Image 1: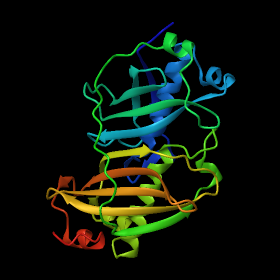
Image 2: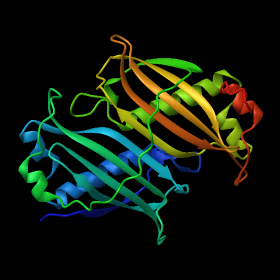
Image 3: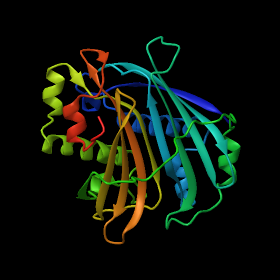
Length: 281
C-alpha cells in the first residue's frame, strides 16, 4: 500500500525534557520515528533497504519551533514524503500537541540513497512504489559557513553517537551545537541553569544542519562557531564541523535562540552578547 503521509502518537519521556519543556533536539528523533513508522505502514520497513545493502542517509535536517512542547505532552507527529527523485528524497514533518490545529514544530529531512560504503545509488523500485510524494515545497535555510570564528571546541565521536550505518547519527550534530553553545557560555560567566531559575531562558526557535561528509567512531572533530545578533531579541549561531584528522568540513549548521524573561520575549542582554563575543550590541 503506497502512502504520502502518516501520523503516529508519541508521549514525551523524562529523558527528553529540558527544564520545563521538550528538548529541541528530541524532535529529530521523533522525525526518525515518524518516517520509520511511515515506511512500515507502506510495507517497506528499513530492513528491506538493509537487505539490499542500501541506506537512506540524511544530508540535511531542520526544524522551526513555533511554541514549546510541555513536559509529559502526548504529541501527534505527521510525516509526509515531500518529493522523490532517482536517488534523493525529502520528508516534511509537523508536530501537534493536544487538539491544536496549528503545529508546535515543523521540520524536514533530505536523504540520499547510498550503499554501505557511502557510494550513491538509485532508490530501489520498491521505495518508489511504497511512497507517493505530496510535491510540496519545503522551506530550507541558506546554509552559510562561519565567516568569522568567535570560538571553537574539540571532541571525539563516541560509539553511542553513531548509528546502524556506522556514521554519526544526524540528530547528534544538534546536541553538539547545544554543547558548544552552553559550554562556552559557562566558561564566560553565563550559567544557563541559574538563568532559568531566575525566569530567563534562551529557547531554540530554528535549527538546521547540512551533512557534507560522514564522521565515524573515534574521529576527532573541531567545531568552529560564529555568533551574531538577529534583530534585537535573537542570537544566531553558525557552526562548522571539521574532521580534525583530514581538515575536511563534515557539516555546517545554524541555530537561532530567542531570549525569554518570565514568559516575555526581551532584547538580548548585554552580558549574553558579550559572552558570545558579539561586540555590536
